[in-house]
Every structure is written in structure tokens, then in C-alpha cells.
Figure 1 (cartoon, rainbow, N blue to C red):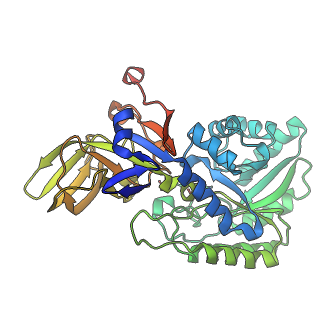
Figure 2: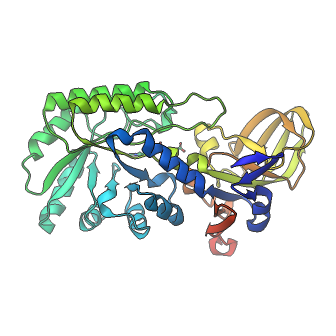
Figure 3: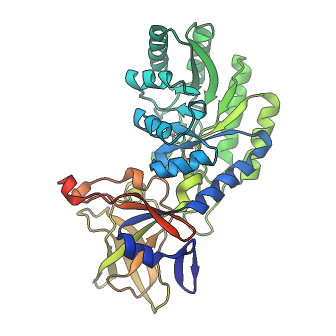
Length: 404
Ligand code: LLP
């Protein structure tokens, strides 16, 4: 995805022609970018050959899941819906882990029936339920236990998950009680220690802290885990020249950890695989001029992409055609929804825009479409995948009559 002579291209296709053909707002993904991200991710950690389970909550489009499965990744799911969908996409049960604090008995039973690799349990209460179901089915179930390492991920507080006041995982003390109580269970086999401290992490420090804690905990409880699931969280560059995670250093820290603990590593990346492989195409409806700023009113809104409204997240916005005069005035890019928080970006100098102009909102492949809604009774956008010069529709635009 790149600019050539001021025009934006998805692989070999001009973005404006894609907008014309499929309408806006429109999610567009690049097949080759996804492929590159998967290859890079595997390469970073190839020295210890981890099992990479794509975090389906970041993007659950069936065609995307099929591609990701074809590239050899497994899946990290958090609901029966996600589990059914990854199985439908052809991902093998022995590459699937199931996370989440509130798996209900129906979900647990389905996961057991499908013989997935691991149910990563997050509480004693959940383990009691898993054991009950396993006993009823006369099966042995492989589980992981999610540790809350009380580590600050230094990211947006709403997506931080590893501090003791967060609802996720169990404390060190609880973990050791669970191990003692369940290590000889007839129906449960503890195979994995899992953690996930947060998302959009751009510094190595939290990961190093996390590894230190796991190492200390394992030393103390003296239990051999076949798997260590380190979760996901690797951040991407939403803004140019933003601080980046150093994968080499992260890999070295894990290699050090593995010298003392010989386990198979599992990762659950979402954003780092799909985040920068997706763009939201949107059309300018009006430029509403006021004394202090121009409101650029787009046809995409917070129902299509909620990250800016929900987390104050910044997504770069660019015109598909960069050619033109630039004006020094405050511009606010907003959607048509009746909330002040329906605002994407505030910026100073910008190209003089016209109604009808097609714009790009960058890096929306992860937590974009999956978080869309019908708020203000707006239909959900379509999704298109581009592979070379061939755009294919991978999700139809919702029909307004269907939602009425
Ligand atoms: N594993 C677990 C247990 C998780 O809870 C998550 C994300 C992941 C893996 C994947 O994390 P990633 O590699 O994508 O950072 N809606 C928010 C992000 C929420 C993340 C929730 N958990 C956003 O738009 O930034």
C-alpha cells in the first residue's frame, strides 16, 4: 500500500477506483501485507519456533481467517462464535487456544468436544466448571492457567490487562493453590501458563518485567509447564516515527527465559498481524467552515471505527489523491453521528478538500470492523480484499432494509 505520483495504491489498484466500484465507507485489506506481517512475525522468533495463534478478536472476517490459517497460524479465540468460525475457516483444533474470563458451560463443553489445544482458564471458579464438564464427559482436558503478573504494560489504560486490579488471570498465590489442588486431577491436565499484559505495547520493558515475573513464579512453584503462552500485545506504528517495539530484544529476552525453562512458546498476536494491512476508505460529504476550523464531514463514523472515540486513538487520515493546494487552518475530521466524540482527528495544515473526495483512514485492520455497530441505524460497511490487481468482496455492505 503506497503512494505513486500522489495517488494511493493498494497493491496494483488505485484506491479511488476501489471506492468507486464498492462504495464507501469501505474496509480494504491487502493480502500481501498480511502475508508479509505473518512471515516477519515468524522470522523474528524463528530461533525457538513458537506456535503463533492469531487473536481472532482483532479481525474475524472469514476470508481473512482462511488466509491466516493457510499461512500456518493457529487461533486465539474468546467465544463460541469465534471458535466455530475458526474451525469453519479450516484452522485445526490442535492450534487453537481459548482465552477469556467468562467462558460459560456451553462454550467450555463445545471446546472440549472439539479437542482444542488449550482452554486457558482465568479463575478457580472456571476450573471447577471445566473439571465438572470433563468428568461428566469422562475426558481429560488440557488447560492453561492465566497468571496476572501485576505488570504495567504502559499502554492505554483501557487496554491494559496485566495489573492486579484488572479482572484478568489469577494471582501468584492462587496459581500455586490451583497447581497443588489440580496437579493430580483425573480430568484436568495443567499444561500451560499463560499471560497477556495488554495491547499496543511499544516498549520492551513491560515484556521484560513480565518474563521476570513468570520466571520467578515458576521457580517458586516448581511445576513444569509444557507451554508458556505469552499472549499478544505487540504495538504497531499508528503515527510516523512513533516508538517501536524491538522484536530482536524481545526475542533475546525470551531465549534467556527458555534457557532456564524449557517449554514451547505460544503467542497470540492480533494487531501486529492485521493492523496495518487494513484501510478505511471514506468520502468527504461536506466541508463545514467555521471561523476557527474546518469540519471535514466524512461518510465514515464512530459506528464504523470506534477506536478514536473510545480510546482517543490516533489514525492517520490522508487524501487518496495528494495533489492540490494546502491550507493552514485547523481541520477536524468527523463523522455524521450525533455525538461530539464522533471525531477522528484534529490537524493543522491540510490539503484543500472538496466534497466527494476519497480519503484513507490508516491502520484499521485490527479492532476496526469487529468493533463496528449499527449505532444511529447506520449499516455496517463492506470489506474488500486485494491480491495484486484483483479486488474481491469478502463481506457485503449491510443492507439498510435488513437493519430496519
Ligand atoms: N490475547 C489476549 C488474551 C487478549 O486479550 C488480546 C487482546 C490479544 C491476545 C491480542 O492482542 P494484540 O496482539 O492484538 O494487541 N480494542 C482494543 C484492543 C483490545 C485488545 C484486547 N485483547 C483496541 O482497539 O486497541
